[in-house]
Amino acid sequence: MEYLKDRIRKDGRVEGKDILKVDSFLNHQIDVALMNAIGEEFYQRFKDHGVTKILTIEASGIAIAAIVAQYFKVPMVFAKKTESRNLDAETYESSVYSFTKDKTYKIRVSKKYIQETDRILIVDDFLANGKAANGLIDIVEQSGATHCGVGIVIEKGFQDGGKILRNKGVNVQSLAIIDRFENQKVIFA
Ligand code: G4P
Ligand code: NA
Ligand code: NA
Image (cartoon, rainbow, N blue to C red; front, side, top):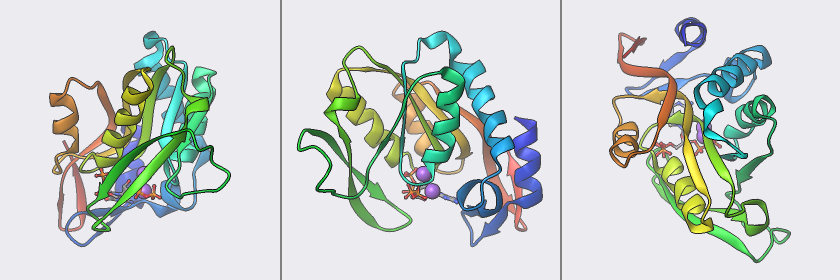
């Protein structure tokens, strides 16, 4: 998606050797027009899959997934990372290891919001090692619903997540795939 890549070239900031900061349009301030272009693009790529629900993980997936859901005209559900008293006792749970934070956390979705008949499109902002996406797939599988694929805004192609998911037969569609960083510049695959 050229429009997105141009925006990453212009406003993305490379930090250290493997982190891309996109706070000015995706992770802190949000460019809603860009989110709409992303929503439309995912709709074009997955419209023939009979998607009934969009699933993401809090926090930064929510804004994207909400707009994607608007294009599909289906509900959006996000997995929660925090244990909440209000969350139903009946939940699907999975464990996710975060490399950036070096810790494992639990994600949960109430059983009320995923049905066996659902066809679920998973959406997230970044794909790095794929642990978050794997946790979401695990939850969909526990529920007996079908996952139609994973839509990612920015895939870091030099980390293993994309390869692992595609090797498992998951339909991963990434709108921008980063091959590497060179002199603080983003080189796309
Ligand atoms: P993984 O899920 O693919 O295995 O990723 P990893 O554990 O390495 O990353 C943990 C968090 O950092 C995830 O957000 C992920 O989206 C985000 N992330 C990974 N690489 C980058 C990057 O280069 N730039 C930015 N901006 N984010 C990156 P999270 O823990 O789910 O937190 P949240 O921001 O959604 O609340
Ligand atoms: Na995320
Ligand atoms: Na994030």
